[in-house]
Structures are given as C-alpha cells and as structure tokens.
Length: 277
Image (cartoon, rainbow, N blue to C red; front, side):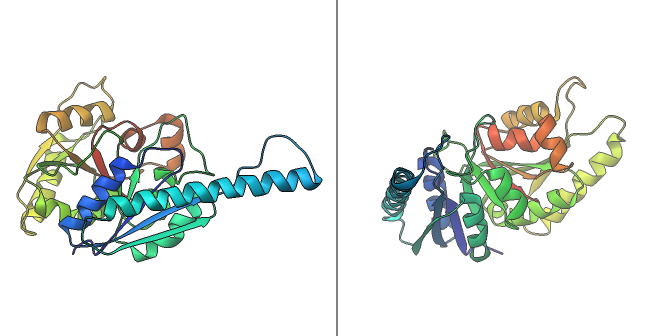
C-alpha cells in the first residue's frame, strides 16, 4: 500500500503555506502525483437590492472569487515547481466542501488545514470535519505552524472501533517510514485495564507483522483529565510529530456539541493528525 496520489485542499482567506509544504513533501516521499483543489462560492450580501445594481454586485463578487482562485492556483504551482512530481490543479465556482468531496475519488489521501472552532465559512473553505466524515479517504490535518511532516515519532491513538482500525490501516505507509511508533489507549471509567492493555498489545503485534516496530501503552492520567488532555500529554512525552486516530468514535452530534478528542485534534493540536472515519 502506498499513496499514489496526494490531494491538497486549499482555502480562501486562510494560510495555505503549511499544508502546501507538507503535501509537497508527502508527494516526494512516496513519489506521488499531487492534485491541488479549491473552490469558492459567491456569498450574497446581507441586504436586498434588485435590477442592474443587484446584477452588478453578483458579477463583481464572482469576479473577485475567480481572481482569488487564480491566486491559489499560482501559489500551488509555485510551491510544487521544484518537487519533481506530477502536479495538477482543479478549481470551480462551487461550495468548497462539495467540490473537494467530488474530487477525492482520484486521491489516496487528502491534506487539509485545521480551523478555528469559532469560524467556518462554507463559501470559502472545506471544513476538515466535513471532509473526514464524507471523503472515504484518510485526511491529514496540518496546523498552520507546522512546516514539515515529522515522522521521527508517531502516536497511534487507539480505541477498538472501526474508525481507529481504518485509521491505522490508512497510516501504514507513514508508519513504515516512522522512527518510533507508540500505540496508546485511554481507558474509560470502569474499563478493565488488563483487557485494554491486551488490546493495545494486539495492535502492536499486528503492526510488527507489517514490518513496523511499535510499543504499546495505556494512559495513566488522572480521572479529572479529559481524554484530549491525556492524549496531548502522551504526545508530548513521546515527542510525536504525527497523531493517527479514528474520527468521531461517538455520534457526530455529541462531538460537535461537547467537543471531544476529534474536535481537539482538528482544531487545537500543534501536530499533524491523520484521521479516518
């Protein structure tokens, strides 16, 4: 298994340098083709007018969106110019999430940026939460402050769910290139810790059969700490540059209302995160 095609989703009015750097590096590591995608939809003004004035506003807004898409294409092509691989650009006047989701059929992995929990503009960006839920492909979320894919230490956040199993499988190409791999589970209240440890050990043994040496551990944080806080602490302990996790182990409604590990990883982590659903 490899990543034959890397897709990077760019956004209007957000920094794209970090995701471009990591996507280009990923394509180089795996000798992949790379596809840049972006879309924008004109956002109608929050007031009413009609006739020629309304038509003029629409045309002006659409022209501005096209100019910004052209700027993104130029930024993408400049970033990929010296990468040596095959680079392709796709864009459209459309809702970004809808357009990106229609393109991911030709990619093995999608690279996206994180986003502020307080800001989500459906006219200008494809939310990573929407992408990971609907793409059917692994999503690599790159925070703005990250400028390279650090695989010296990788943390696998394990939970015995279909999403976590899929994430570890999707991450195999990266895990094979990792220096150290740690598989960790954060027990819930009432869990049998010996049974949890047996499960994590099974995952480490499965990785070993794929040629990946991994250590197994379970979190021993205080009960008052959230799962996200415990995971962040362990990631710091092992110096993880990448976290691999299943997305939305609970219902998405609960995640969006209460937060949770997935919400934390998408919006607050200072590390790259590979998520699968």
